[in-house]
Amino acid sequence: QVQLVESGGDLVQAGGSLRLSCAASGSTFSIHEMGWYRQAAGKQRELVAIFITSGGSPNYATSVKGRFTISRDNAGNTVHLQMNNLKPEDTAVYYCNVRTYAWGDFWGQGTQVTVSS
Image (cartoon, rainbow, N blue to C red; front, side, top):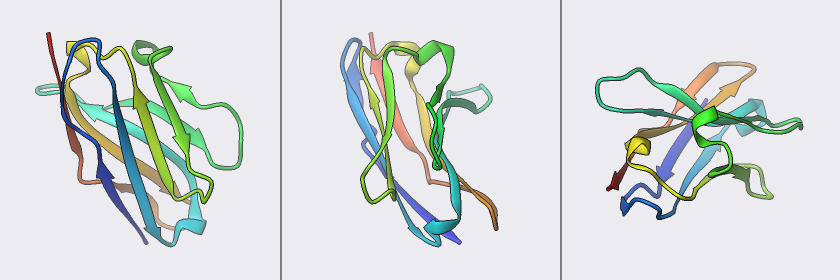
């Protein structure tokens, strides 16, 4: 099993930046994907950014390309989402997600990002 703890959500003005973090613990050896999703009020949850832990380039939603960057710390157990040039349409609850070989998907508790115009 994997436990996820998110941090970094806040209220920010349009054009500002935030950095979200997600610390994974437990059976992290089983993780093969790490990513961020978001869900705005009244909308379905959508993929923001994701990467495969074994290598390769991250994938980003078209709406965030060039503004958001997903990264992982050297130990491999914390994933970050650097969000620059934030827009009001980025307002949502952001969820960390990991996908494991043994147990499927795990989700963080969610962190609120609010971008004011």
